[in-house]
Image (cartoon, rainbow, N blue to C red; front, side, top):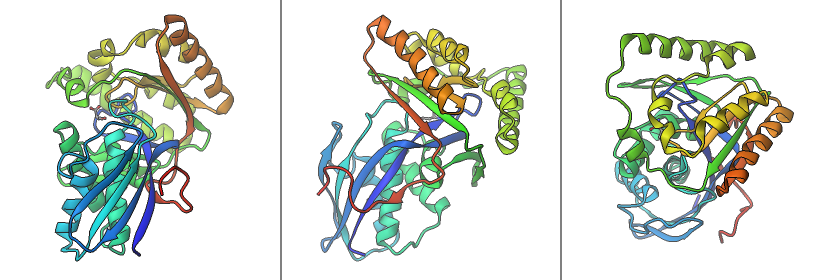
Length: 314
Ligand code: HSE
């Protein structure tokens, strides 16, 4: 294989109670990239559309991950990369993770599937280090494995795929401001009281059980975050109003997507997800806040090969 076009999904990390430990992939949103083998052993980013990102291989997460994998595998080729971003960095939707995971997946294709998903996740985590200074796995694992994932352990890395009911639909509103993950991580307290920890891990258990058994009431009761949301919500315009409106419209729960500023809600079925979108819309429209809104099922697929290309990549 000399060329591969890939799609890497946007992801919602944390999912309220699972700070740095849970995430899921979206079906309706993601980035596309075209990787072409070259004879020189260099990684060259020749085109970026849809976002202002560095072309320098060492500063762009796509380049960082590609270079790392080509070196690790002692590949006898380099790559030319074209990147088409469909959503902005600093959105809380795993923009850097989609780039890093898409790059890991694509290079693996060009290498004839040398690496496993857990190895690809480790490479993609190095992209997260380049992007925000922390080796976080929740977004990248969701973007590689697809579906819901649990990062059960970071050392050694242990990624668990969690089944989820097909009826679940996410509504996501993205106020058009940038929140840097690096900054958003600084507001989280490094230590929490034991009572808070108990409440939080009990909800993680509840959420995992609810997802396994399609118990929507249990999912709803468990979508509560005592750790990141209270510390971060001031970074997001009208967070409480948007969250309350989503829940009033029947959402099972709502919270901050990843490190924000996007807000996600999960609903049982498309009809409720549409009503939730309408309620979220109304709040930001009334307040004069520029935003984008997405309604998406959870993708059971992570990064994948696409053919023919569906963007302006050529
Ligand atoms: N779990 C990470 C955080 C996701 O909340 O900071 C970063 O997008």
